[in-house]
Image 1: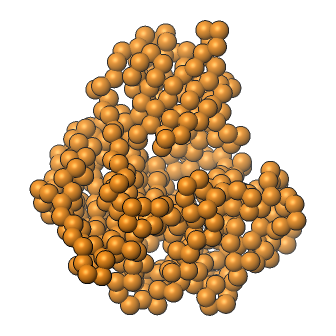
Image 2 (image 1 turned 135 degrees about the vertical axis):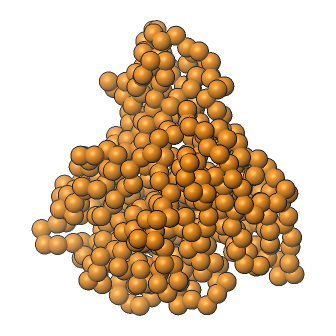
Image 3 (image 1 turned 90 degrees about the horizontal axis):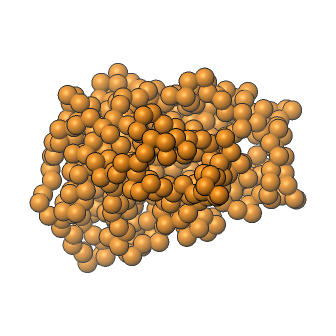
Length: 459
């Protein structure tokens, strides 16, 4: 992806990483490993991301590492710089749910229809009804996004999605499989869950989150509506090297509306690791409890995803809005937690996983300068819409000699040629291969995370 140049500024970075084991089995990660520093430097130098704010939490406390500037010519970032944390909000929703469960205000087995207004009913397939627990662990049968999601402004796509539209989708939705049968990551389900939890307390989602989590943990820069201080410290979102709009998510807030800083998120992770006394300790422990292992090789709790690591389970979540990619995670056995925030549409999950589980590899993200030339006529043949799932497509467009990829409800990214038919992205470690039949382009294959997904050309 072509991006504007960013001056790199590094604070609190040693030249080598150091990790030691304590008698209790806990670890201290006192500096960033050199391979991580090198990877971050490369990403910023290549314009992949303007900035990155990292917090490492361990038995010694929290250490902050800050790279880059919020924008070209802007302020250097620090632990108080504010980012959109996107779907990490789901971990907050999981804790809010756990707290209401422990308080006896709701049960995981409660049917969702109990909390819907008169005339709105979630349909079922088979005998089981959708429960609150199903919303929390992505087995409700609701899709990733509702089919009546048609934003007036694609650059702020959730802003005009209303509660009435949410209820209309629920009323019209016909499930394709039985509840609890399979894992399907669902922004809609988590947004509905946040809505139900807030209504259960006669509040809106932000006020509930602030009352139950942010204020008790001393997280003054964790809000949905930006305070004056947060606005002053906001790192503007970037996609493709360009400034993009912030996202507003009023109806499905529980799925991804929260903004926060590395300092505040370090408090959240430290609380999950029980490094200080908190009234949320029991609720957080409940949110970590495994509900199923239907997400491939991963387990799922209340909002959290759980990945097996060399030294223990990595409990984690990532987030992504139009101009931000974020990651948080921790390992109870080692006592190490990580917060990683960027104001770029480029994911950096690999860095977070590598810090928590050294056996996890760093991504080999290429720059656009490594691309080869492909004839303009060949590029034009690839333009079109490719359906990977009933409600998920990839649109390939062209501007001159540059191809672009845009997935459903996601930003547009540049594609760079590795050969005449194989292309790569610089925002994430992924490739796209175009396939022909009888000389005509009929499909593409998306290679990402060790898996291959086929998409048939439909337009």
